[in-house]
Length: 89
View (cartoon, rainbow, N blue to C red):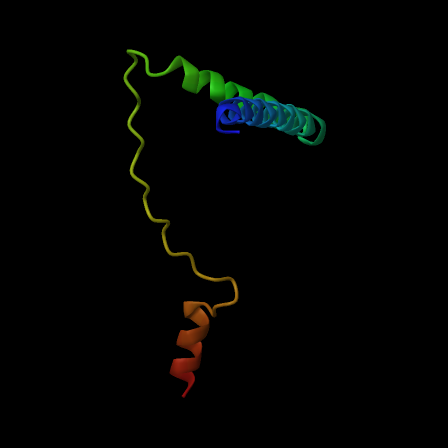
């Protein structure tokens, strides 16, 4: 029985590899079936860009994000209204 263990191990590895391959194919076919075409094209373009790797082009620096200016809420009373209330008393 000890002599047969390597053969069993190889057979188990072959079965696992076959099952893994079938699962990968099933996953890819489900992805192609369920995912909208435009998303597939976008992800494919991203993969191609990543596969190209870095080029000699200098990347444009990303501008630092500027915090948005404070905007007055539409429901907040205006200054004119507050001044009218404060001066009438």
